[in-house]
Length: 261
Image 1 (tube, rainbow, N blue to C red):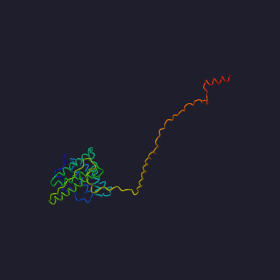
Image 2 (image 1 turned 180 degrees about the horizontal axis):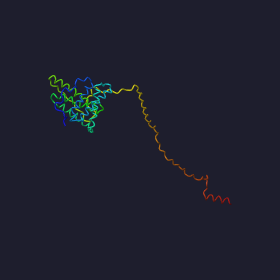
Image 3 (image 1 turned 60 degrees about the vertical axis):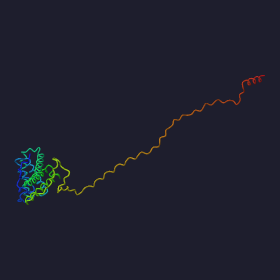
Image 4 (image 1 turned 135 degrees about the vertical axis):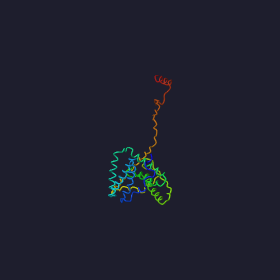
């Protein structure tokens, strides 16, 4: 469904905000309240998130000490209105609806032609910035790059129309996939968030314990000599000793007879 805004968009004097305001914060965040007022009847959920974005950013500015009486009054007024409308809305799929609306509006804006295209592109950048509330108050680099392009290109086209010239061609960046936090291939935003301050004292990191030495290889063992079984050798039996001389039997008998005679 195409966003319920007429093809010509709002008049050019609606962006940037009227110079009657002297508050930089009001000039910065009043366009989101204007988007909410334009969409209140046809897209109340989208209008609600536009107000919530303005409230959140004004609260962040107050915490940084940047608020002023005019922006503080705008904060209180917008906060009260957002709280009242929230009671009548079904925000179960609010994040998905807001993201779908912002993406579709951007695709329509970059394909538009004619003098209203700069206004549509500026508004598309507003709707993309509204998505910051789903990313802890700060757009991912890919979405921030597209939002910055919308603002820069819208002002470039507006100046060309005022001078009676055709705007030079420009390649519009592609949006990252819906629901993604980071997309590769996109440059970082111009103003990166400052790193949180480090404490005055930081203990020295404890050096990790040295790794345990590797176990020593086992000592070489002498070659095993196979033990041969011992079998005792028995000597041959010794024969009984024989006399040095033994006469033959016949001679012995003759000698015995002679001795008897």
